[in-house]
Image (cartoon, rainbow, N blue to C red):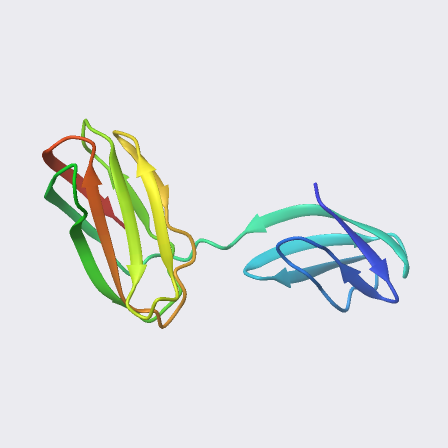
Length: 152
């Protein structure tokens, strides 16, 4: 459960989201950076409590790949490249018996992501910005082997 503070008719929340405006009343819906939050106000000034939080930050991905790639332990090798024109949050799944390192970079330099993916595990590459240009997914193995990678 999250809390907001209402001061002069404006709801403030510090952290990832810095300011939300216009919360006056008993119950309302507030949209904050891809999240819908149902709030209940205790008055014009005072506290409001989040009753229910719906996480909408994962946007359906625009890439769908399932392939085998030969990885080595000393360099990153390209898994897939695609042209990203919308905000995207793809899931990358390592369907192999060995762990791997993932690197995702955008052509325009506005996005970079690095992660280790354990065997038979997945990570979500959150919020690749819209209009990032070509986005490249690369991997490096913990052993020299053929890996099965799914991106969707």
